Length: 229
Image 1 (tube, rainbow, N blue to C red):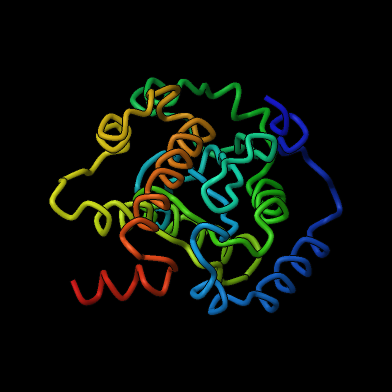
Image 2 (cartoon, rainbow, N blue to C red):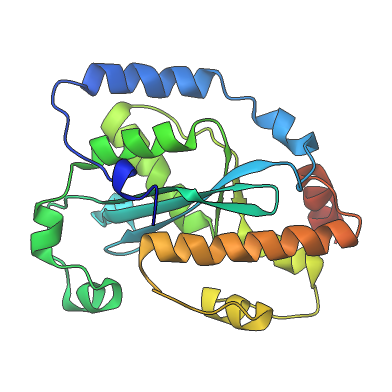
């Protein structure tokens, strides 16, 4: 799959100050409010997923992989992908190893979190970010950016579940599997960060079209319908 290998994280020593400067400049230049008014059919987004050792970064749980793919409007750009494992300080539990298919040896040879975050945000640029049940990703990115770079997390982050709750309010969907099965999307590679991001991208594309048919044109429309609903 073109785009993955060229964007896999690799260690680069002596770049910490440049990394901090780049991320802070990126945060300063963010125009988050402007994205509210761009039609969803034209909005550039980065759809991503992270795998972690648990749910609580403030209690020591860590990011172990990040995967992402670019989507323009409702068109998935399979040539623009990002994937990297992340070196961890602790041994994986048997449960997490079985769930993700990752091993301690793989993670011991992976790049440091600071390098992976830097490369991920180089890939994401100032695009709107999207994730399935995005609060998990938000908590970990907030914690990691502050710990690694003393930088806040300022990207707009859209929860994929918001789209299908507005598009199909009478359909009760929770898990990524349920959503994909409902939309007829084949489930491949669950709990692999890149493949989960690709599944979410297919959902995004599907629901952008459904929302367009309902007259929900922008993120502003989406948030207003959610607030008033």
